[in-house]
Amino acid sequence: MSVTPQARPLARIRSKQMIDLLASGKRIDGRGLSSYRDLKTEVGIISKAEGSASVSLGNTKVMVGVKVEVGEPYPDTPNSGVLTVNSEFVPLAHEIFEPGPPDENSIELARVVDRGIRESKSVDLEKLVLIPGKKVYVIFVDVYILNHDGNLTDASGFAALAALKNSKVPNYNVTERGEVVRGDGFKPLPMRDYPIPVTIAKVNNSLLVDPNLEEETMSDVRLTITSTVDGRICAIQKSGTGGFTTREILDMGMLAEEKSNEIRKKLLEAL
Image (cartoon, rainbow, N blue to C red; front, side):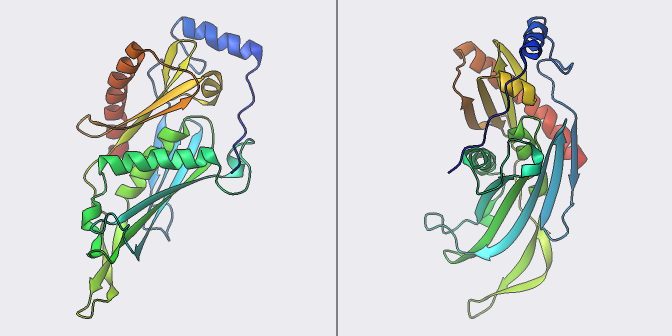
């Protein structure tokens, strides 16, 4: 498995400018420490998919397509549909992305997005069973990074959620012989929650929401907290070699809940 090359280090003068601004509570792009970049969402952009969405978070752009097929359930969950998330770092998205099979960074991204959706139980998989133990709906969520300017995790999580909410499930019927045949029309994908990931980076002891690529390059640790509609934390992912204090983790938990509510409202209003 290959490892995605890291972004080039910032020039010393740029790094010093960032540190000096943070000392006065400001960021290199003019935002406050707890502010997200502009969020733009569009759905239904892929005609051959059962659901799709694109999300722009500042200059970071992500597209997600959802495909729905009929397949077999996992042996340990015979009465549940199947959900699987994959991600691809398109080489044109940034000079550090290379063609080839998924590397550990794209696999980690897919797992973080998958965990947020799965652990929040946002998709009601128990309603996606055709023949218990034999035939279920299989939901494929494919994430494509189209432009990388930092915080791929949040942008991908937002786009996946928007694409799932946009998705329609083809109707299938089970005959008396136990055969699964395609019926007419579609029905909405059963959704029961809307988990939102919030990523916070630590740069020179300052905590920054929605880090851009320059801020990620300067950071040695990040934490992504995914929260449900009722404020329950359903997934946490730490990245990087640095650490947080107990006080910082408690502060980030409260900040993540506040920002998840803010982003969820914007996202759902745009759908």
